[in-house]
Length: 107
Image (cartoon, rainbow, N blue to C red; front, side, top):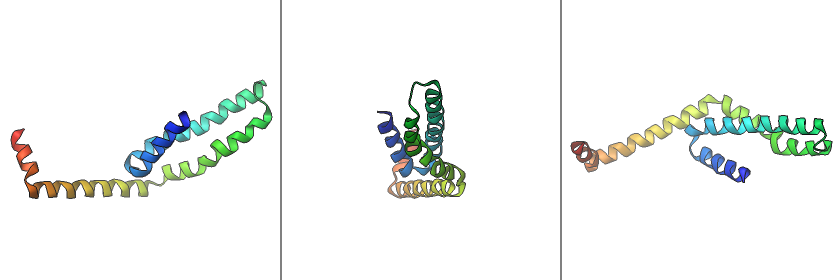
């Protein structure tokens, strides 16, 4: 269930890059804390050593792309500028139609 919820958040992050940084940071934290818990379980003997291969394919492979995404401020900044430009164009269309003017008079 948690994996499915993370998947929904990652899909949202892919569409809305301006919100992605927080979602990816939480995902990276989970990908770091998960292996710590797994190593503690293996060390105490609760899990067999062969279970460590799960970490490689489930957690370690995501460290690099998540970290690179978080460090790439230019892409995130560009996404925010694009979102603002879209909002501005939408506002201008509303002004031409008179929607914004009418709503401002009601306030």
